[in-house]
Length: 272
Image (cartoon, rainbow, N blue to C red; front, side, top):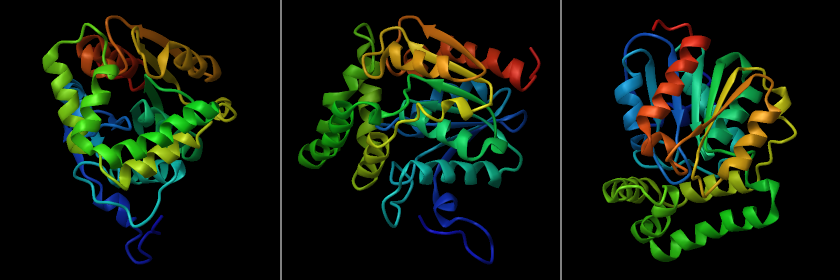
């Protein structure tokens, strides 16, 4: 990854990352999207949680409106880039990660514990490197994207990210978000970072309080993977989000936001 400028101290990758922001007071809440998404996935959180927090949602390097990085990025690079966004805003942050974003958030808490006030990890896992078949499937997605292109790739994957009862309008929105977000080489770097990740051995090192959420009908990472996270973290609460699939924050935003708000009231002491 490109080093920080020796004069300004600013990492050019971090400086170039596009973010969506809402709210001008309260604690900083950094939102990290899943591997097939972008900052657009956090529209319900920006709208609601921006009333009591400074909400920042990124387009990961090589995604959506963020430029392609100069070279391959690993999980540590994504975590360090997220750390740069927090530092640029001063102080520390509560970090909300969905799926791949949750894996980044966990690594961020290991590498930069002083920057992480708390974690909200949604529909995530310790990484695809916990199982050779999962790792191979993750890497195979890159070939699929190259062969069919973003729109067909999104159309094939998006329905599985939601519950079977999800309305057609939401399926279309998730499809559009993915189609506009993913491209090569960025998606390939992200997929490799996920395929190589196995965080089970380092979860016990995380001391930040954590809220672990999982959609009741998550067919991607699933309830079991979220339970592994919740059980290994020192300070964790575990919540099942009813009537939601893998993208609980989008499918059941009112329920999801209520749990996040409750968590922030405890960890950031924001008022009722």
